[in-house]
Image (cartoon, rainbow, N blue to C red; front, side):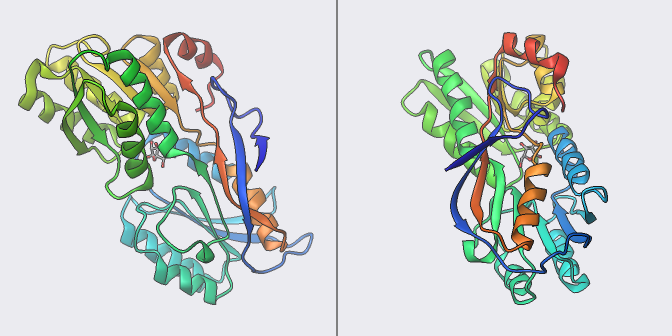
Length: 324
Ligand code: AHR
């Protein structure tokens, strides 16, 4: 297992390290020293603050200055748009394709097409359910571990008393929604935390607010805990909680995932209670893996960012230098 620090872009309780495991690599156009590398990047959309930071990180890493021509597509979180974008990258004959997959399923055919066209595919951020032989490498965060960490905080803080939880889930069928739910459940198993309801808020503030309004109408003051699978949904829920005459962070404790500037601000003022980090600054590592793959060098099959977690004091300490 290799580890390295992603450098100054990372601020958190724990520094971001990326760890690799198992070899692998696809073929593709070998770039000469001066050859511009054309990369198609199929981004999910622009659903969250995390996503905005990730897009910026990718655009700055895949810059002309760094030897790239980036063809960027944001799929508006529609799987069919994303598959169409990847088809179009193949038709344009790009050198490599990077995908942050909206959902885990439905990838086999288009990835087989890319392989037949000898265009290497690198996964960024999210994982997919496809044979590892169809992509060269994955670079992202450990969503299961994030869920485990968030759930461990909930278990330690509230697990000994009867606690009614509601969950705002991310995009249905996406790897962070699936893995965070799994990780969180494993941590609260055997505690007195009961799930009253769990619905998707699509990783957006607007839907987080709407779904939380519904929870509050249905369960009233029974709710003691909100697990928001990302900061944005938790931030949207704050409006709904205040409008219902309850105090976020006190009447309803909130644990979320991402660690964006806005999420840590809510934590610093006591409206959130705990935030688990998911680092979006993956661009430099993805760009270096793309270059290695195209140069025919062996790359690891997976590079995992090691994330931190924040309580109120850690958020206050981190905020002045937070990069996203
Ligand atoms: O895949 C990472 C997740 O996607 C982030 O937690 C969320 O904010 C984003 O939209």
